[in-house]
Image 1 (tube, rainbow, N blue to C red):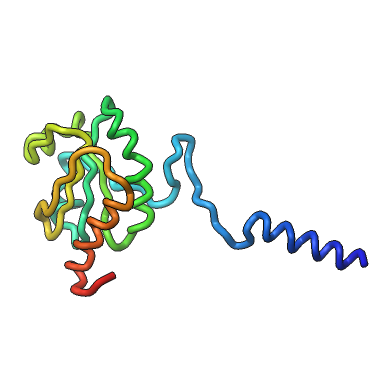
Image 2: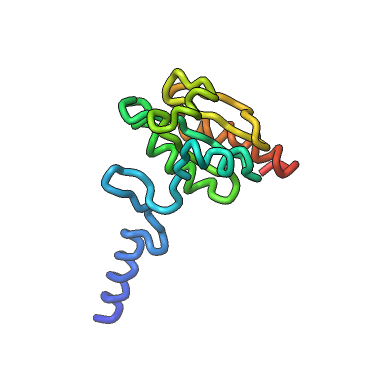
Length: 148
């Protein structure tokens, strides 16, 4: 009888806490821990974005921009979800004036999608994770020639 109760308690506990269900880890800022966006600079932009074999989502942000800060969890989540299919990167445009000038960044947040080294799409303002994921799926299909 005791073993039946013990088994019942163990099974109930596993059901309650979700046996095998992995909860996403977050840091103190609520950002996903795991795969993080690539941190770009004026010096690394060419090798990380232009020469990338994968489509690249670049988050052009500024530390004083509240909508940019609000986008951080979405950008980090996409980096984790799409790892290996899309490169997700971010660049602080205050610290990288060459990129800011070259791509005429004058609104924030500015999200650029690059495919084969060329700017394919430009998105301005807060974007939902679903909207960005859907936009990136188009370029992922183009890269592979088949629907994902």
